[in-house]
Image (cartoon, rainbow, N blue to C red; front, side):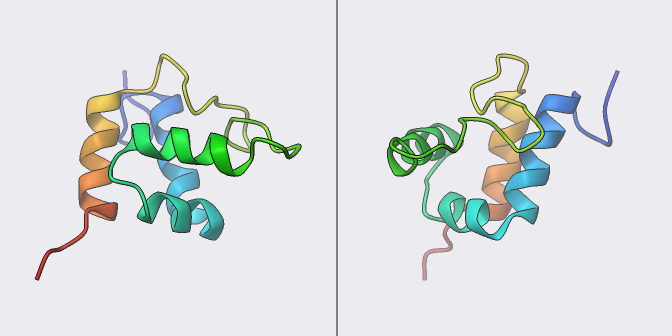
Length: 83
């Protein structure tokens, strides 16, 4: 079963926040992969009250996230084009 064109709600929710939140989008654009994003976001917000999940409560490291689908999303939206 799919959710809004994604494998599941968790994958959709992460992609939704990465594409619609300016701060998260800016951070993601600096990263080479989703794994890199998770490391960077933890470093940036280590000493703040921000939780390590989307504002809807999906953990960035939720095991339900389809990493292959998310990597495809990443390649389409955040891969740097070399000149």
